[in-house]
Length: 546
Image (cartoon, rainbow, N blue to C red; front, side, top):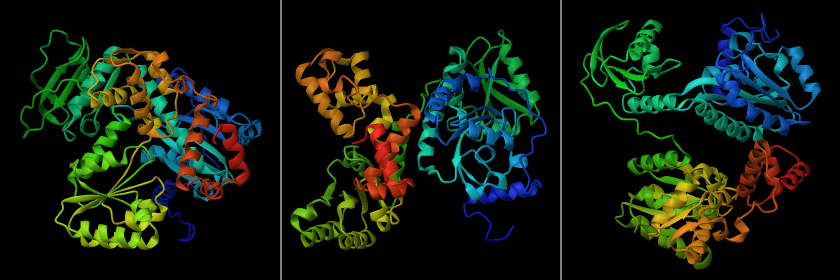
């Protein structure tokens, strides 16, 4: 392999290196020694089947194929848009029961995500085996929520002429649903055990933590590394002894030596064990109060990190996504000084630049510059100079497209992308409750049909639009249950756009986001998506995009 042939992407390059060390030859075919008999009633298959069926309907007559593999790379399920693609895959050995590892099939979107535990694009020539180089693929690992235990990989692939731009949101949506369905396959006792396990792991990453019950075992990274199978069997046996007193310390002989173990009983035969090291004291056993992480949880964490860190901050998001509120959250000051780039159009460039310079020279802890994507090249240079000279932290907000302000972005220590409201549909009930609380409304409750109507809406103007709807609702009802008839009529149905499948919804969201980035320029949008203008127009029409 020459230096010219070596892939530039570090994940792909390292995968090629591992494949070479395994003795694999790029000119060889996929090594299939024996097809394994797969358990098609496994927990992963039961959770994934409804999602796969939905995707199969969307893939019909397309140039794409879909594969599901377990955590060892064995293919559990496959579906193809055409019989021609299925036949070609048969010839390659891409069949149910075949194992895809980097030792048997080199770099691809099943074996490499298993190795890296990350989503991986493999484009044409990046495949280690030459027989796969007419394909583009994207694979995402499927984890067990709460423990990050690898359950499997889902992979979408198509011919090299197809654009990979729409693949990632398709699989991201599918993986999110499969992971949630995996969680739903657990019994109440297993869910309680998982919650207790997560609570025990918080703040104790280096401490081995194990949760067991008759049919399930959860381990953190330290436990997986330091405890053997005999230790896990001992803990499971210990948990089954109902006469044992829990909630205290017990001395146990483990493979790592004699250790003090803290025990928390969760159910009749389920318990969480924390293995103390010699130098550790006896921390209180936390209760199972951890809830599942949401998009809002991740955003709140990013805002807190940005607030506590030093350096300038860039906040991007669609109009109405709460950019100003996020900027105030980072500065921790509701009365922070704000200058808006849109004022440069009204007041003129010179006056705006002078106002910015005045802010930069004041003894401020921080100040906010709103809508920097509206600045021309000269004013962007003025802003950049001010950021370099001021002792204050500058918090900037921008639209979703950041190409035009790339020099500004490179000078920001933290970059936060705000989720659109449609990306937080699972949290809509709590968001509505929070907005009502902000208004001091205590005696109004949205019924399930009313919330379902709101969930069906796409919220193109995001939180501002939702706040406008709440204003209309509260003007008519100040107490009691908000029913479907209380919702503005235009929000009671999905409107004229038909109900989209999983693949189409991901495609819809991707095209709309790219169009927003290029401010509706369809020529630029088609180029970014890697498709022709005619294809973009036809997909927009089919998806109901204006």
